[in-house]
Length: 181
Image 1 (spheres, helix red, strand yellow):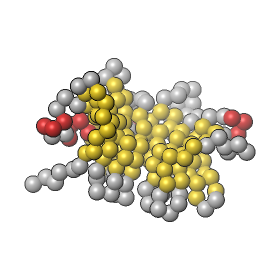
Image 2 (tube, helix red, strand yellow):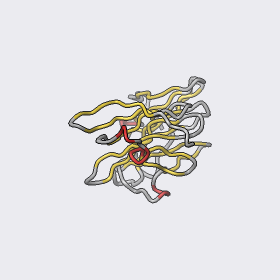
Image 3 (cartoon, one colour):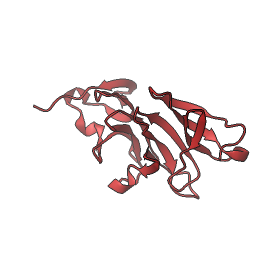
Image 4 (cartoon, helix red, strand yellow):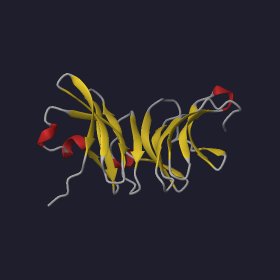
C-alpha cells in the first residue's frame, strides 16, 4: 500500500519500539495511519474513507487516531485500532460530530482526544470502559471560566494533558483525577 517514498511522520512510540504515525500511499495518494513494528510498516486502513492518521500507542499495541469514514468526504472520526480491527469511537455512542480525533491511550485502554460540535467548537473527552465523557463536565470549581478544547495525552495514573481556553487566553493544563470518597 505504501509507495517507495512514504513521506511519513511519526507521532508516538511505545516501550517495545512500536511506532505509529501517518504516511503517503503509492503515487502520492491519501495519507494513511501506520504501525511500524519489527522493520515493517503496516497500513492500519480507515473507517471507510480514504485517509487516516495514528497519534498514540500503548504498551499493549492498541493504537488511536482519526480516520475518514466516507469515501467521498474528508470527515474524520476518532478511532481505536485493537486486535487487528479499527473501531469508530464516537459513532456507535451516538456522537457523530466530525471532525474528532483520539490523541492518547494508556495501559488501561483509557483514551483521550477531542470532538467538534458544529457552531460550538472543540470539546476534550476521555473514553473509558466503553463510555465517553466530556472532560468539561468533570472539572471541579477550579475550572470555572475555562473550556477544555483538546485532550492530548493520558498517563497510566489517569492524569490528562489538555488545552484550556478562557479569560481571553489559551493554556496547557494537567488534570489529575480525584478519588471519589
